[in-house]
Image 1 (tube, one colour):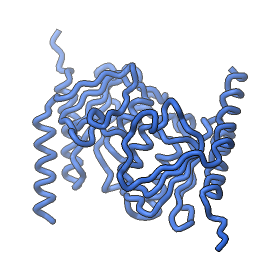
Image 2 (image 1 turned 120 degrees about the vertical axis):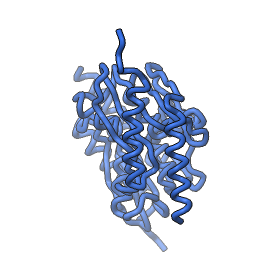
Image 3 (image 1 turned 45 degrees about the vertical axis):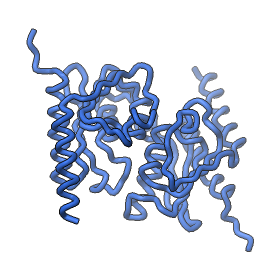
Length: 149
Length: 149
């Protein structure tokens, strides 16, 4: 069976969210959470808009997905996020017991891999899906920001 | 000069919040954030009430304090929390660049120490303030919960 619902399909949706963040002057990170090929959360980084370090795309996505499901555990769910989650977000994902994390660009400095954050034993993690697109958007953001200052 | 404003004074305020969580059937963790001896955030764990794994006392306190200050960095602030922060909360505190973290009871399994979470280089951390009170409240909660089930 041919299905459009693969990791690339959902990462494109996360990238759309990242672009929405970019347009608001936020570090462009976007996320979606999916269950049974259905998107139940679409979020992007809002740390500047909300003046709140906890307003990463993933944190909002976890809250939104739990709200949709009516339960705090994200069993059967996959998170697609354009940048590798940080310690905070990976720590939240640990509590959520989410099935799978798929990220785009690696964060070699502050990503959960480099930081050694523990994921839940039930959670698998895959990186590098549409990495180039996510990475280019981040680079463009920081170049434009530098030129403005 | 004699001042009532020491770590014990503020941890008592955090313990009051933990008791409020207890009364709601929440794992009893409470937090306050203080700047210049003034409490600018008082929060307790609401993960069950909000059906949200991100609703730890510390996360709410960071959001509330940033809202009070009008800026996302908690410079000059101290967090008092009755239980050692987890990876998620320590990760959020990393982003906040908070000056100091004071906790009550150690979380030997899921605390940021055991989990190896990286704190911001500007942040100091101290544990064991009113540890017995915080620990007893936790134990009472789990004993009562076990007896109910």
